[in-house]
Image (cartoon, rainbow, N blue to C red; front, side, top):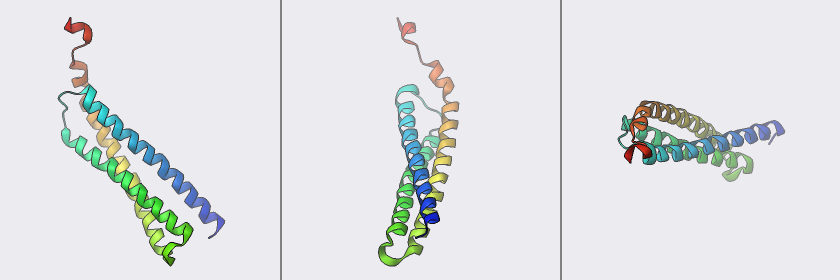
Amino acid sequence: MQQDTLEKLKLFTEYLKHITTLSTASLILLTIFLEKLSRRPRWKTLVIVALCSFTLSLIASAIGFLGVLYLISGAGGKPELGDELWRVGGLLTIGGFIIGAICLSVFCIGNLHTANELPTPSATH
């Protein structure tokens, strides 16, 4: 395998690691937002789409990593399989993340007023 190709695969794996971290953090943020900040969230469909999108992004990044491993190791003697896996995994990773981020942002913006309407601790005494 050429040094140029190895460098590209290394950059791709770094990209996957960053998107995986961001998707995981977004899932945690969404869970916390639902649990702590919003008692009656609006636009629940966005939550479902965001959860599915971030989960897709995580699964797709695992597929992308698998494709890179196939290419580097030459496993099974099918480099075209590794090439397809990392390309499809990469596209689904970024696509899932972008859709999830948009849905999460719209959901948070749409529910800001709900969080502001919650009683403050001093108002309940």
